[in-house]
Amino acid sequence: MRSYLDTVGDKPILPAHPKELEILLHAFLLNKAIYELEYELNNRPEWVMLPLTGIVSILDMQSWRAPGISN
Image (cartoon, rainbow, N blue to C red; front, side):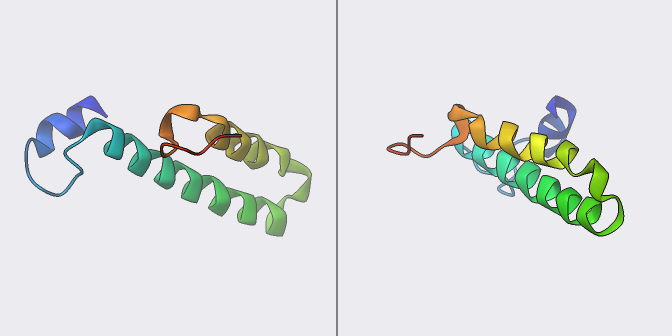
């Protein structure tokens, strides 16, 4: 991640504020985990706990939530 950010530098393709960048990263991680859940449901339902665990882990991360959102 650090190498990617160093390469991008100050180009305006990413959020400038670190908190916004963190939210964007977590959104992409959640998107990927949901895709993996769909894949496992369709192909290997006995493995469905792996992506579900990832989804729960991402949703439990307090740091990416917008202010005012709590459990």
